[in-house]
Length: 270
Image 1: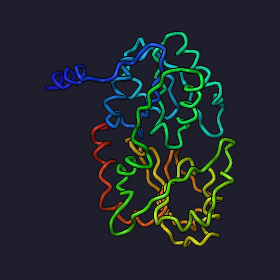
Image 2: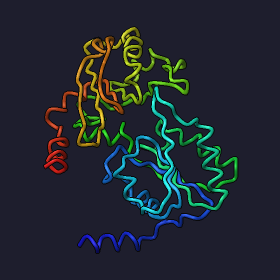
Image 3: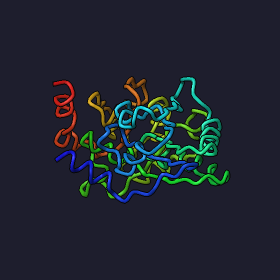
Image 4: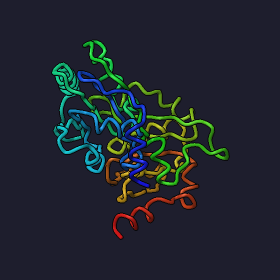
């Protein structure tokens, strides 16, 4: 039965991955099962994979062994390739006639700088395709039992990045508007500056007892969840990264809906 499914996948009418082109592909929040079929197809067709640090080894292992892998990950506080150098590498690889798979954690256009990379490819005349992925700030929350919206709590949600290109808290954020815009705020890359962000939100009127949930390794058997309040986030918060931060009342559903970790650990660790 598995072989039949794989045969159907191989026979699917996927678009050709042409030499001299770049596919910007979202790898999702970690688990290989959360890849799209088009992303899986690309892994088997590429000549070279240029991947972020957050792309799991299990996902990279789905590509045939002969495909070249180039690490281009950027992690806060660690030596990292410059964005301009990554983009130049993509262009050079494509111009050499390779099928270039740019594999990015989550979704390329959700705080993933995919728009910047695609723009540079367009200006260089390099054909490209965008393959969306499941963002940790969307589907990834499901693995923590946190519905991003719920009829009883919120009909709106706001997404926020915790740092800008320099690594500092973004200076252009209208914090009073953020504080009022939605009951639920989902923050990416926010752990390092969480005390500063919490201070801005409290000063803008968010209540100190607002629930704050930090989910590390969202779609990984090593997932961990740290529950505090916004007021408590003014002090140091020590959680593993990468982590997603969720502010708001959907935290109340976690105890009932937190389905993933025990099943995952049973499967992986026996």
